[in-house]
Length: 249
Image (cartoon, rainbow, N blue to C red; front, side, top):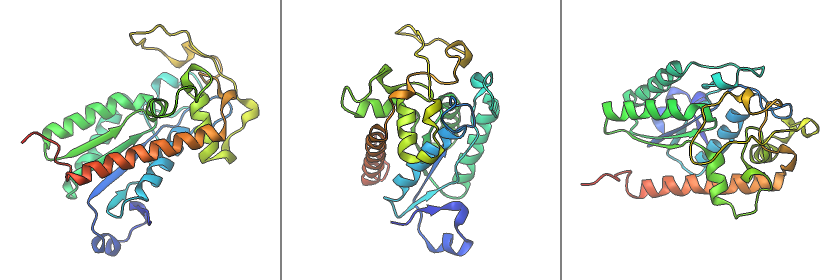
């Protein structure tokens, strides 16, 4: 099925096609160890978004967002970050533009941990201002994949980590030509359970990566890609089946 990428459409093609919903991904530009590209968060989330979009004839896919809130990673070069308040306003402007254009159904696929809070604030703000907007978010695919895959899929730290086993595996599946596995190394941080520490990344690792990327394989990445795409497609199909009218009447 065709993927309708907004940046490639002419005015005529846009008017001629009936789009019912919009999807966009949000990533980052930051260090991912010495083995993954700086744009990993964007490359992964955009690849997933494109595959999801291929299942829907009425979905408009926006261009990828390559910059995120990466202030906590900036001790490792090369990092280009938006300030949290900038990120919030940037996302709000996108959502408000979509509202102005008549869209009421939006799915956001996030690829970076630092974007979770800005996405939450921006979407809540727009939702309160425009209650008719229906906004769905996959905010941490790396957590969702671990929940969907069979126990024992990953060997170290449940596959977690920045440029760790899981993220490196899905990178090997989606863009192996950009991965340099001979430089893969990471650190499993000693984080206590039951509450979250507010860390700077340099407090957790001296390699620019956490987890164990040396345990990554393309097969694990393929399994991750398949369960994630299916989960999002099923989610959107469910919402389409109820016309996104989930609210109590």
